[in-house]
Image (cartoon, rainbow, N blue to C red):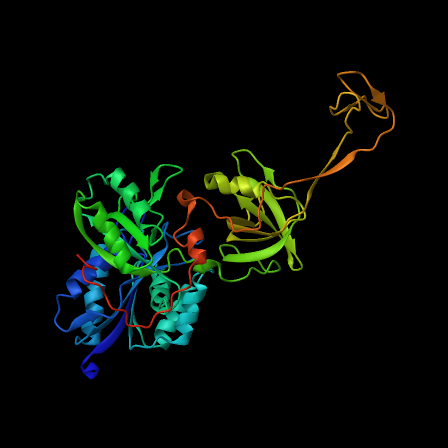
Length: 444
């Protein structure tokens, strides 16, 4: 009988730092211990929620974790269980951890809205605290407590629509260098695409599923279903130094942070958004290979930037010309002494491009080669046979633009966790009914 159970949403964030640890590993460890308790089970895969990637004080992935569980345990025991684990793992002085416990199946609409805004704005710690109090949640903050924002946001994003899965494996010995068989990764990447994605960057010969930091993560495989990421992981076995793994449901690879429109009359630093407009200046490539241009619409204008690490994407951006109509998306960088507020591009979609016109000197009637100018107001002459004319009319020529009316994004090596791969734009968004059934072998 469901009446014998208590239902909880548990959110956790900012338990890691650049020094090491990983909130996904804390979540993995918590789940392993939690499921040993009688009368306790998860109602869905653990949620791995990526938040606004432009927050300057975040760790690289800006991930928050949440669990949806039913248990016979009372509320206080559940809260104390997670509090002890957070305090056990979040030992870095740079980890400003947050924990939130919400009782009940339904999530308040205000919390869902807070979570939605945390994808593309700077969410307020004060507002998070107010919502925790308003809805009678329990919470824990360590040090500055900024992780409360992510913890609450992870609870509010139930992944009802487009979502992906990630199997994250952990290493047993953190002092031992990670190792994956390159040949197996390449073979798996080819065999399991598009059901799994961003495993290997063929152009730059780079394994994309293995991090390089001091954290416990050994590798992570992203895909469209729990079964597909599990099968892909099996392709890589045996793996050295493997402790275990867990499958998460996530908003990674959905582009969810770019679903709102940027108002050029009110541009806020650190926000993520998309905007359509007209290219106001021809792109300029500055020292280091960075490309800059201005974009405008009826609401205002903004400088746009595309940086060298985006490789071929930067080359495409440089092909724009004044007057082109485009849709772009990305994050707003705060102004500096050298630059105004800047939209750092993550996406480009030309909507209407200007014809590329050139005017050519006429051909020599004798030799058939293009004649050249003799100087200002001196006419033109053929360098081969010296035929010349004083008055002439140039020929108008429309040249092909090396730019198509299609979507462009950076290469895999420059993808953010939320970047939606090109092939996923052709997929129908998933819609799920909660609870979600867990496959066998989702946790080891």
